[in-house]
Length: 398
Image: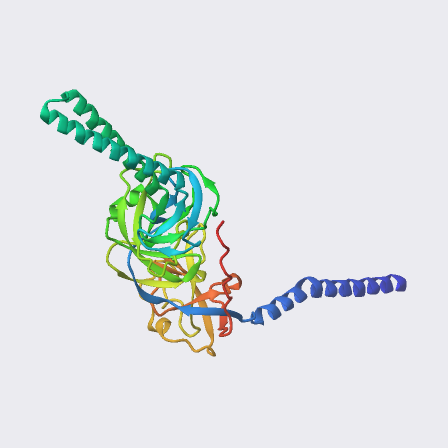
């Protein structure tokens, strides 16, 4: 009897001990951990911010093109010969009519002297025949033959002079010469390239645009052009003409613009980023491109505001959140308690590193430009004044 009671007592003690341990492990401990974690504030994320700005933008038609010379030719002789003299250097600026290359004309000058002698003899023979026909001592046929002989001799002289003139190659217009491709003493055949001559001021820029943009384009519109070689410069031009047909392959139309090039920085063949300014400027709200998170479900930005501003005042985070509270537009204190609100927006044109916001944001609101990946709606943040990644240099186009 006593052994049974002792066994029962031990069983009850062990059961109570096991039950207490189970309650602590599976009930009290998880609740305690949950309470501790729930009472711990998440770390405040550091972000880089910028204010939405109001800017005046004209509608643009973007395109990619290449520069073409206003006038450009390969210098080549019409006749063959030995190069006797070269009067230019590579990359030299020359005026119209400047003598560039002279070919050997010794043989042609000898032919010219022979032709002049034949022409003088034919002219004397013609005069004698004309005197004889006056006295009736010769026939009209003889006079006509003498006249034809004189005319053939004169034509031979003119041909020799033309060949001599063709062996002097001059600049047909003012421009810049390219790399010299000929040396003294070299024989060149007709059509052999001696170098290039290009007029650089002004210069053309040709670029294709989709056919649906044709109603937006017309001659005389302003062009803003950027090139990789001078990334800090914006070159101005005007639309000169539009091609008369649409390409069947790309369904695009080639547009030609004319660009003043007094400094001669722009060269034929250079790659050009072209924007055709179409229409009057309009006021738009813009933010840095890094502030916008693009997704299939909609584009959004994180708006930074003081933690004391209730979310109900700032709208529901959708594009229909019309007028932001005045606290959103006031300058933020970097040392204040700040939170973020995710707001869906509609984006418009993009210019450089800025994008237009057509709906969902007002000028003056502060948006997160770096650090969005670690944010959640209503998360507490702090502004990092020293933040901001340095953009890398663009890679050259091949």
